Amino acid sequence: MALNDLLEQSEQYLLELQQQIIQEVLNHGDMPFGDCTLPNLVKEYKGHKEYIDGVASALEVVKGSA
Image (tube, rainbow, N blue to C red; front, side, top):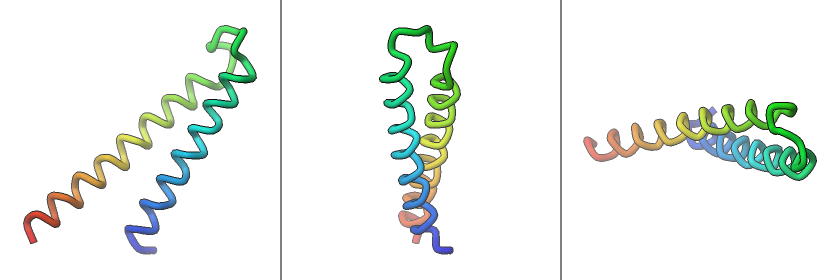
C-alpha cells in the first residue's frame, strides 16, 4: 500500500471519528461527558491527528532535502 493511500485512509478515519464525536455530543448533550465515550473518542482523534501531522511534516522534510 502506498503512503498516499495510507494518508488518505488516515484522513478518512479522522472524518469518521469527527462524526462519532458529533453524534456523542448530540446524543448525550444533557449528560456529563464522563458517562459516555466522548472523552475516549476525543483522545483517539487528537492522537491520530498528531500522527497525520507528524507524517506530513516528515514528508515535507524529505521533499525539502531531495
